Length: 176
Image (cartoon, rainbow, N blue to C red; front, top):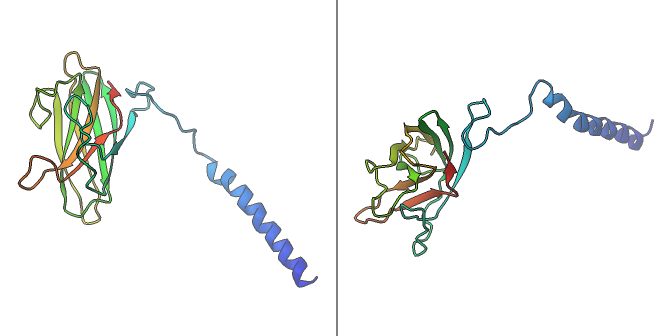
C-alpha cells in the first residue's frame, strides 16, 4: 500500500470520527428549553438579560450624551417566584477588585422618584470582582404593587462626579 493511499485511509477515518463526535457527545443530554419571562415552565429558569453600555434614567429612557466607559461583561437571569423577583447577576472581564453597584428597577418607575439603592421600587446589591475579574450576586425582593416589568443596571460610582465611571444597563425591560 502506497503512502498516498495510507494517508487517504487515515483522513477518511478521521473524517468519520469528526462526523460521529457530535452524536456521541449528545448521548444522555436533554434538549435545551427556555422557561419564558417568569420561569413558568417548571424548570426554575428565567429570562437571560444582556447588558449594554447605555446610560439610562430611572424611567428607562436613554441618556444619549454619555458614552461607554468600561470593558466588563455583565449579564443576569431574572425570574419572578410568587410575590418576589429574583435576579442572578454575573460580571466577567472586570478589573480585579472593582466594586459595582447593582440595581433592579421595577417598572413603571418615574425619573422623579430616583433609582438609587433604597429608593422605592429598587432592589440593590453589590458585586466585587475577584482576582480573575469575575463576580456574582443574587438580588431578591418583593414585587412592587402595580409593577409589570423590571430593568437592571450595574455601575461603578464616579470619583468626585455624579456620573458613574463605568455603567451598564439591561437591553430590555423584563416582564415580571
